[in-house]
Length: 480
Ligand code: NAD
Image (cartoon, rainbow, N blue to C red; front, side, top):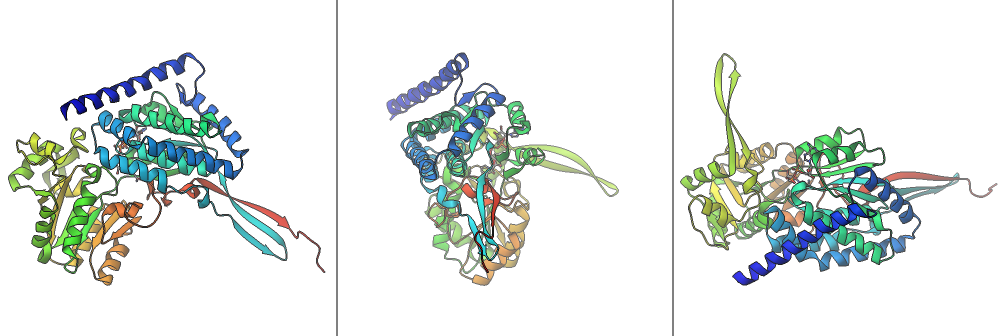
């Protein structure tokens, strides 16, 4: 086992070194795919986009098939690279995400023109490409986001310049290279997918300002979504979530417990859609917790919760004036060092040994606890008891913070399900299943890893990256 780990680590280091070497070689000769300047990347992408438009849709589908096959083939290798580089998440879950992104992201079939005919002729509304898209990608889900965005954006006829998270640079750039190579091997243009070889906040800023970029797509936290929306360009913002899962007294508790443990522990809770806090009607809370423990969750004691708060959160006391009094107020943040780490490692850091196989830590906390209010992205699920479903729905809406991202509910009462769905107004609402069913993993519907709540595209696909264009033929033939 130890020998295997050393061997795998060697392979990972070799691949990372190859990416660095290739970047250096690229800088010396004519650059392709990975560019040292934003301007060069945009220019090369523009040339490739013009070439793509000259190909039939049938050919474009061939490029997509090649990308899908390459992504599946390299799914595990890239997952391993991402976990090794970022120190976040689980290889098996990232591998699944990469494969799902490769196989369940729609292609050109997503582009459906509208036609209007009548006495005055024929009108066609086409879904035209934007041109060159600037795609800004996260560290928490670096590979599947690039696979998913590449397929959607190219399917729509665009070229892409990626500005990747510096903390996931090597694994994300390797993904861009692999997908790009697949397009070329299928007879497509080389620089349809490009990236900035040295990603940085400064280069992302340059990309946002570049006149050759026709559309921006940001997948990340509040700062980058705000930045693209302030750029003056058309932008798609896929931002943060804090998904509540509500369990009422009518729920199938065994199924609910299993689903919640599976969803909240998936990739160590990194996905923006993952259950981040459970709000449970008191009458069924003990039973639900018991089933969650039977499904592999570890119930932390009050002392352990206090120690975990000190470990995984940062805190600062701010003095705030309230009316005539001055009140101290504690402001919490997330300690990035522990984002996406294994449950057993988090417990070890506070001096407790639990089974390595433990996927999720659960704990009972009051409704204003920072574990409930902060987007932790760790396998820690706080549970809040409430007296009834009305309180559960009200609290679910409050802690979702108006992100309108994702919410989950376990109930067999249609009125209760409808009441929460209407009140919380999220882009994804999952009933009686794990959160990831909402992105097509064990649920119906296509997959995306760019969920654009703030700008309203919802679960993005090829059509999200098109412009509506009307083509009108007047009369067409003579009538009497
Ligand atoms: P992040 O916001 O730190 O980084 C995302 C990208 O934005 C990176 O490429 C980063 O370099 C860039 N960036 C961030 N701030 C910037 C600034 N001020 N100027 C220029 N560039 C900037 O996010 P992360 O930690 O990598 O990812 C986690 C966050 O992303 C979570 O909040 C999660 O909910 C969210 N997320 C959302 C979706 C979705 O589809 N809605 C998907 C994945 C992740």
